[in-house]
Image 1 (cartoon, rainbow, N blue to C red):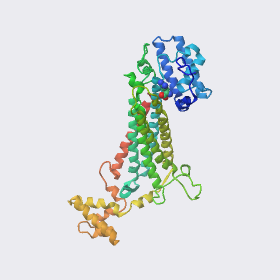
Image 2 (cartoon, rainbow, N blue to C red):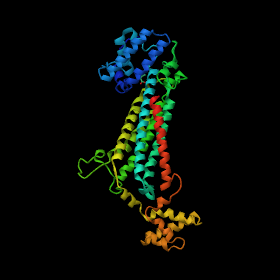
Image 3 (cartoon, rainbow, N blue to C red):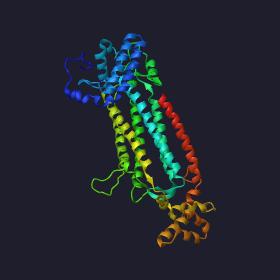
Image 4 (cartoon, protein in one colour):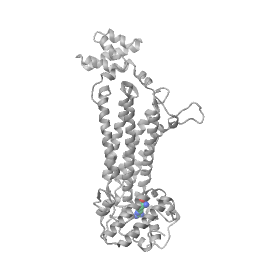
Length: 463
Ligand code: ARG
């Protein structure tokens, strides 16, 4: 039996049921749907729409249905179009006429919007917790990297020696923006749509403020049309997840490069790499590649869902049912991605001496030579040209750059000292840069940022 059987003479076609159902994926909202229904029942009782006895019976029945769902005992019917229908049907089977009062003053339109907000609030909080774990891993790696340096790249060409700790922290700061963005999305979505009805509210004396408070939302909706139409929070969550995916993809790309024989900066642990079905010697970084690959699919979910929303008239339209699969998938992928990539990174063995050797090219200190001249009054553009000329000469004639520096009238042996391995990062002073002292200061502010995130997460979890 459908929820609208009174109005219809005929029964729904099998195609209609197959095409319009959402039960196959929205059963993931079961727990939040029960929570939403319990608050609704309490609201109906407070407003005197149902009696205390009816309220108690409904709450007990909802508990029973929740237990059936959790234990797998719940049996779904062919006609259960979605999780809301299935739960209401079962409540009515158990509680008869009282069960039939559950949906009083409510539509699936405000119900589904409420369920999905409850769900998203919790799940994004879970992603924040995983981001924080990842940042703690990066912090630990940065702390243990001490004075290890490697080449920093621009255009994937060696540029300057960079401290490995600086490298790890760079990814940590990007994740800090993801964390912050998600907490802001959570704060914005913290609005209860319950009580908006199908689109225009109700003639019954509902109390949307009470149910909002009961559900732990910061406030209730202001406009019922907007309340049932608004899926900004899904689009925002998808964006936040897509950008997090992009960040993981960039980390993944570096792990792919660094694990090659050509770079050789790290060795992957067996537990986090795969072999080849044909080539016996292979060890492949599949997790890192999928962190790269799957980010494309999450970007697709974001753009696809924005296209779904575009052009929809107010208020609820069935198109909105298309909000769940992309959101669920993005949450799954990012949560798995964060844990797999952190496992890969924490179990990898880093080859510090390979990194140092790769950065111990005199050419990577060219800017230090130019800045040495600047400190002695030479205009930067001229200094750049002088050192550029020496580099060219060294490369063309296969002469050691150090020898040319020593012999140069404006440079000499003091300047040649800059080419000694490790000197470049020691001398780099500017704040936020990759010098030894500056990175110590940076590590301190990263640590306090992580502590602030820890506290923020506690309030998110207890909210
Ligand atoms: N399964 C639907 C969804 O996810 C629930 C709302 C259905 N509302 C309606 N008027 N048909 O959006």
